[in-house]
Length: 97
Image (cartoon, rainbow, N blue to C red):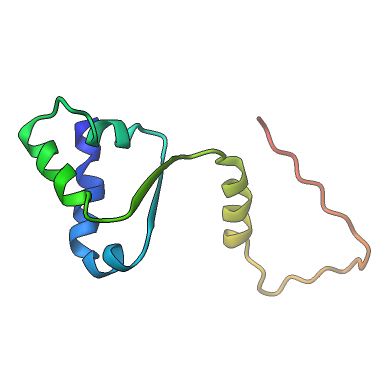
């Protein structure tokens, strides 16, 4: 879990002006907030916590991945040269799970 903290620290360093001027919301399935705000930390994680405390970062759990699947499908769906020949046709989408 400690290996996840640099994934927040490195973008914060590279995108410092954006992190300073905007509120940042991090969606994750891992307990990053508990890792970074744990009172019993190694020196490296404590240093990262102090560095990240200057930004307005909110950690949220990722709630639903299924809605993202539909958005990805529509983004990757090729639309060139395809037209709907039936004006009142209905699409049926079956999702497993």
